[in-house]
Amino acid sequence: MEFPAGAFITATATDANNNTSEFSQGLVVSQNSAPTDLNLSNTSVNENVGLYQEIGIFSTTDPNTGDSFIYELVNGEGDTDNNAFLIADYFSDGQIRLVNNDFINYEQKDSYSIRVRTTDQNGASYEKILTITVNDLDDPVVISGPSWDNPQIIEEDPIYPGLVFSSANGNAITLSDEDANADQATYTINWDVMDTGFGLGGGYFSLGQFLPNNQGTLSEINAALESSYFTPNLDFNGNVTLSIYINDDQGNPIGGISPGVYLSVPIQVTPVNDAPELMLGFSSLDWNEGSQYQEFFYGSDVDNYDGSGSYTELTYSAQLNNGNPLPDWLTFSSGSFNGTLIGTPPPGSAGSLEIAVTVSDGELSDTEIFTLNIISTNTDPIITSGNTATFAENKTGVVYTVAATDSDGDLLTYSLGGTDASLFTINSNTGEISFLTAPDFENPLDAGGNNVYDITVIANDGTVDSSPQAVAITVTDQAVFTINDVIVNENAGNATFTVTMTDPLASGTATVNYATANGTAFATPYDYTATSGTLTFNAGDTSKTIQVAINDDLFYEPTNETFFVNLSSPSSNATISKAQGIGTIIDNDTL
Image (cartoon, rainbow, N blue to C red; front, side, top):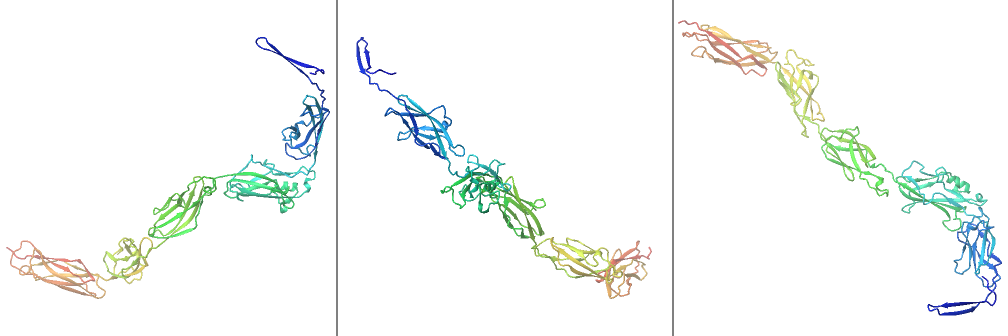
């Protein structure tokens, strides 16, 4: 609203009782003029500056001195790039500035057009199109690849080469430079791998192609980075950071300040179950019979010490390598930290056992095989019986008894061998040896035909044999005595008994004793005269007689009477086949 010169304003006030009061004030009226120009102190900007950086300070040309102004970006001709800028009035000096609201890159856009309005405090305004030019600078090298919000994940102990960085996998690491001559410069690439403990570990990084001295142009380095790979160390799991640095051709950080141009790639190596390992430090053990032994077996599982925080108790087992269980004298137990093999090899267990010991984490296992050698400590039995024996022909029974000792106290058994062994039998428990058929001196069956039978005897303690002992068994010539029965009349005078030696001696002599004995007949003074003595047979003799006097009494005996002649005590080279002769006396008296 405009007022003419000399105008004034009157105000009237009325209270509740209808009382009024008036006030008048004259108005001083001045004439306002609109701004005539708008300027920006600077209309060029270097590329690659950060956001909200000052471009320039606004100023307005206005005929009215002392006016204040506001500035705003407005629609209209020339407003093409208004959205790339902001008008900032928050600076402490009170001046209003143009700042960028977008990243400025010469290679993308070399100038911007904006439309700005300046308005004074009375609302008069002026609009102007401003052009902001972009200064082309030398662009830095940019390295790009997987980011922190996209960690690369790979399992522990992967198939070589491991984690591959490539376009095909969507995780390529690349260098770029927007300058037109960017590929003419030479750069140096370096890297390190740092694990969660901030140590240089966890694995290693390799380029996909060889670069001499790790140097090359952008395209050469990009070619080497394509199919580059990270390989975790064996059994490692956890987080690592792969840092790649791009330096100039002298190896100095680009920009002069370390670390210069670099990329940090987070990598997670996830744990997998590793098989435990049985730490067998030997291929064989030697144990002696009769002694107790104990052997410990330890396993290791890298999963229990890889930082994953998990712990699995290992279990242990053992069996023979052929799948059969361990022998009864050998026991295997599984404890919290190891397996234990305990045993006392019994006598007779000498030999070798192939034993398979297994450690398991419940899912995977490791089996190792070793040989348990059982060493015999058994002493050989010793035969103590003689090496000769004699045995009379025509006899049966024990010819020879093997006797032996064993310092281990083992139960002994006996066996037979030698040239003439087939003619004998042996009791393996007692060692008693007998002829299968009674030998005949006159018809020897020994291999030498000389009545000396050659055998060998052996004692065994269940494990080892004694040394064989040769035994010569000599069969001796043996006479056989028999006596006949005699019937005589009471008046015959003598009863003559004949003692016959069958199988007569080839040499030497043989003797046998004789004596009469009462039957129903009685010796002197009754029916006969008692007699006794010794008969001697020389080589070639076949019979001898014994005369018994008969008493011819006058008494009538209704039945025949008898008496006896008994043979006894033959010499060592004789036996008795029929030892008693019966003498019968026929009575010759009448009633």
